Length: 291
Length: 164
Image (cartoon, rainbow over all chains, first blue to last red; front, side, top):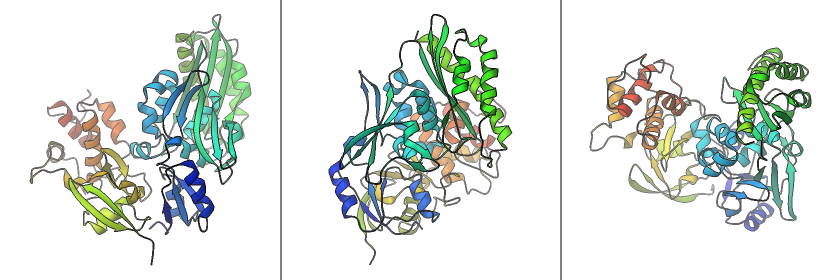
């Protein structure tokens, strides 16, 4: 059985911070619980109090902020994101990603905030959102702050979130004209073996900017700067990417890859190379469509 | 005395009121407090799907869904599929297609497929595979299970190897 804990259901952020301050022993925020309860059941984390964030309106909702982009409440389930018309329109790569996370049961209960805050190295959203230049909004008793994904995810299962802070939302910048963003992965088990995020911007028939991220291969999702650079200048035709992709794959070869059940470092670099091609093609197609 | 909390939920159409510990999972409550042992606990880690139950129509892992989170909600288990002793069309299709052998994955498969068909009454083979790929079976090789779901979805007998 899951070890015993006290359970609190605050209805506001203020109540949540209060609950944390008055909780006896170690306390943790919980939303979907798909990672946290597993950790507790396996004995890797002990928490005397779980504070359920699902009843707090501030962490729910998906909305378009016309100035900044798409704001996704941290308690949005992967299913919510998969089904959201706003996400389909403004970040279709994220909707597709959300539809393929883990399995349908995890998608129905697990949240994007929980996924990002848990910071598992294989996280699908973290890898893609890093390529999109997304930020997370953290709120604590003392105020709010925003961090880029790269500043937020510090290491395996480690983030910059202070214990008293709640991850309130994720902000995905609106795609600029000519921008496309895609994510591709291969998974043998529940978590990806390798994953790649690509954001490209086209102008005047050529790739004017590109960001490539790789997930599941290293301790955190990483931007592979040389792979992005390799795509810049390419003619904006999916058939014209072979040369730039070859250079991009060379850059993947220089990653320091951890070996795990998904395969050897070389095998996983190979997978990432294949995914780079798929994600770059998909991002470019989207970019051209939005030019 | 451990802290307990009262929850009120509908289980297979029947209102239930229970006093539980917060740590009890929905699968544990269904099996040990309500005697509904059709829901199976296998991997206990959310990956096999044997514990699949529906909460407000959504498939969840009963092994890792806190019963307290089902408070005020509608829960359906495999025991709730048959009406007045009549098997659901999906259950009958599982029999017709020999879509189970040991039967241990079957309740989870039925619940996942029920959720899928309620949302998408005529799914493609691809959609069925996507909807069920989180439910593992060691016996059947899956083809008969997919055929059973497609048989319900298409309204005609679908046989192994057929592609829609």
